Image (cartoon, rainbow, N blue to C red; front, side, top):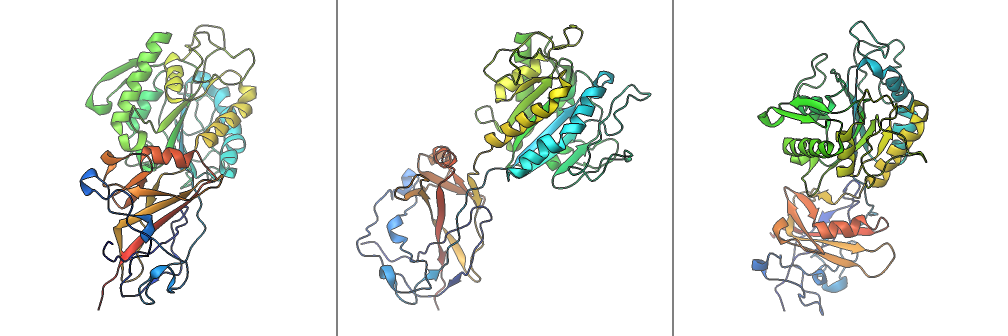
Length: 437
């Protein structure tokens, strides 16, 4: 039989990972009869020597159940375990060109009630970031249309329009800079790490408002195509969709590569993107109405029918690439439906978080990270499954997790199992190192 170990269990509320009623006492814990160490124990194979059989815990105050000696327990009480969906950061890119006045007014009328309110009522932790000039919508002497976002998202009524945006941390931020007909993606790339030129509200760029753990949703609003230059990645690159479907795909791939290289932490990788692109652009409306789905082809006809403005093939390809939705910009009377549908997509696309901070140890104690295991009980019922710890991501397989930078990280297959089961119960169990007198 293996040597004695000091182990105890703790159930964490995954929403806040809080501890309740924790205390530790000295002594030793003898092995539980009938629980030989079954399971992988070859450290060279990347598995830590763990076995759920040693994690006998009665949830009480340190009795002798399960083979424990009376003074041996590092005792904990339990808390209800809940699964928390990842937060979302939503970035609006607003074209400020002279032809956009009616569209911007429609955005102002719908962004609160038919978008932010719906996401907020879902319980998802959300944040809205607007990139575009702040100010009155009416076309001014500079031939530009601006946007003013009202409360409750912001802190202003926009009557009158204040001198600067009413940012409302942590929910609403506004990076005020000019966005013209063809250059929104380049503005986004170039301003990512640059101070906003007018108000200094984002000294390090709009990247300072993003959260690494959040999935990003971009909402593009323009009546034209894509043709701009960017200096992202210290390279002078041109992105142009030429109003053509095949060139739009190339433009989308170019922007995607630049964005992912700009911050893999924020936007992910080509194999696992952390962003979705939605487009409200100048494409022809569907006969049956509603959004174009990612599986539907790029539409070359414009909704205005004039052919003067482009159909935004690059934006359409980005929506296809990232699983986003596409809507015709000229149907301003239906923006309430458009915003509701995007909000619904944001909610339905939110997934359960698969990363959890290591909790604080009880006073005077240190958590033994090598003892951490995870218990998963399917929402449909059945026996609890134990997820075992591996040393790092390279050792990942199904039913495993690893710890890096004091974060418990489920392996991809393990994460997929939990995310597919919103009624699941997940507990984290660990032991603490006890100093003996």
